[in-house]
Image 1 (cartoon, one colour):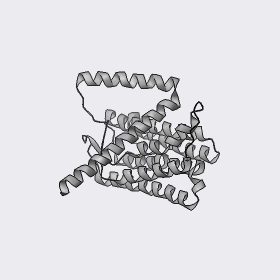
Image 2 (cartoon, one colour; image 1 turned 30 degrees about the horizontal axis):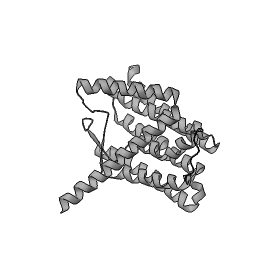
Image 3 (cartoon, one colour; image 1 turned 45 degrees about the vertical axis):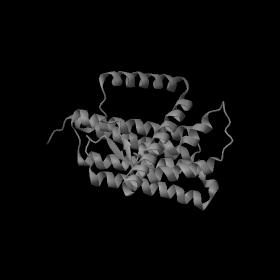
Image 4 (tube, one colour; image 1 turned 90 degrees about the vertical axis):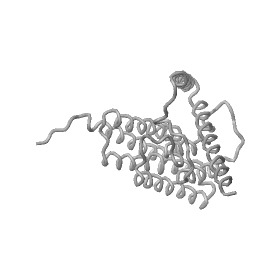
Length: 240
């Protein structure tokens, strides 16, 4: 009987934990436990980052692992956040809200399928479009706002959710270059500053969890918008 080292299965086990967190988010969404549903998606994103990191460190990448990761990402960052947003807010828009949710789910599936086909090199410094975990973080911005009890925001939550969900879906399947931090190489000085910044963010997460999460999500949203504007500006400049 063939023997396999335990380390071979560690990345796939982490991926399965991400999948379990995503499915649990769906369960909590159906039960209208919005905070736990959001936290499960965030936990899935945490596992999703570390399964790829672990696979690279252990040099245990495989086609099976890649396919499993895509399936997990579709459930955790495609289906789960879209269902969460629809059950919480966009159901008030009727059929339009459901169509927008379906659009996001389809875009997530298309992005993951395209990612697998193109087999993007790890050395790449950019993503084309935004990754599905980041898209999920963007569409949950209204939920972060809603969880901050100290401030009552008088905004049209269903409309904002519809706009953000549509934007995130379009950005996932777009060819707009966006920064990738996985293989970003920086000088020693900047690396130290990045470490300090991460520590500060972690400290604020402990003390002001939802406020910090909101700021991080908005920051990434602004980066995505800037990337989109830059892309169109470059495109029109080349055309003229």
